[in-house]
Length: 545
Image 1 (cartoon, rainbow, N blue to C red):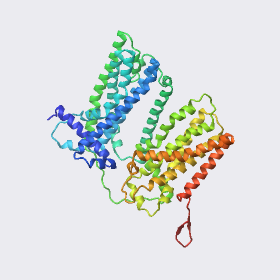
Image 2: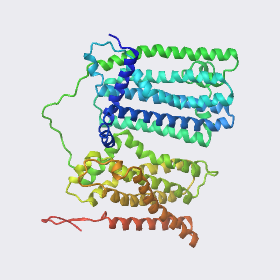
Image 3: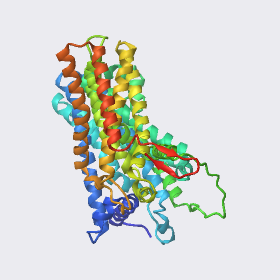
Image 4: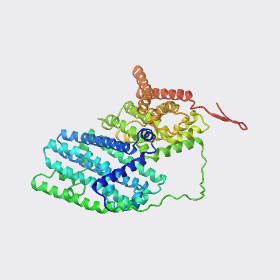
């Protein structure tokens, strides 16, 4: 028995609901909100629709902002390069989303109940589910730019070709993603090692950084993309997949050339449809294959490494922060916030020599944002493990003391990397770079000592889990950002005032700023017992002084 169209869409919807439910069920916020509704399926669909709308809207804004500068200046070649970047971005998004969707369905055994039913399920049910609720949102990353270009250039050919190539990019992304699942499905769905998790997450982060960097660069100087994507010569500009989009949309003029453009676009789209029929069937039946469940093995002996408490906390926090891609995104999020400031102050400076104080003030923003994020993040990553930490025979001073090294280490690595990259463009004395990184570390540690102590005291001793809502959600970020800005910003302003009043040199500014930073750190460290030490008598108990 075959399914009709209505039943097909219903099944596609149920598959998505099950996939999203399994992804959200362990979320504390989802459990709290879903407990207040009767129909969890409708609640999940409402969540899916809101997420789809928010994603589509962000894609529209992203697309319009990127194309606006070149459209306003009537730079057609730059516009074509930007639109090609949007098509490539959309393609990568579709590859990633389709692959992750297949892996999620396979890992959670969502199609297992279908094997026993006497129904001939269409092999494109997964594709329908993915396209309606996920893949189609990527169209909003490309079509707004195409519509705006066609309207301002008064050329309906651009609109027609843009729509055809948009459908092609969605189809091609799904084909590549499903093909990767067919080839690597068993490895992707199997047990992942720590190294593969880290590599996979690092790959996502690098792609995210690349997209953000392209976004910022285009905003500052859209002509730069002309060097990133040079115009291909004939015949590559006609027939190279994806890269021929630039020429066929914007540079085919006249009836003969436009007809050639339609033939090329329709031919590629038709080829992608034929490829879809073959690859999608392979991927669907791979999902229906019985998968080996994890068997509980007998007695196993595991070698345990005994480490110091301080190093255990340090290594634990590093591992947890790199385990999930969303944690890695939050780790590098401060770079995104301060990148425009650094771009304007440093990368687009008129001369190769920079004022060290100006560079330091630009990096102060990075200290404030990073400390605010990390203070919350390195408590939230504990999740349900907070109950175990609360049960340890340790006071809060020890716990905070041992949680500070991990975020400080990551902060130092990122800060040094940024300064090394800046030093390629900016000529400045090595001593000033040392002063800058030293002061950044001092104020980062000072502010995170205060913020972590303040936030940790808000977690009840009976808490089973901890998340962003444990501290007040968005309010927590605002207040933490305000306190961090007060600690770091007031010290910077004080040092600038002393320099101006006493007419000190740049070198003396950093000396004063370092002394102020050390003073603040010592005050906060003694206030919260971070520098308390332990004295172990030879035959007596451990005492804390």
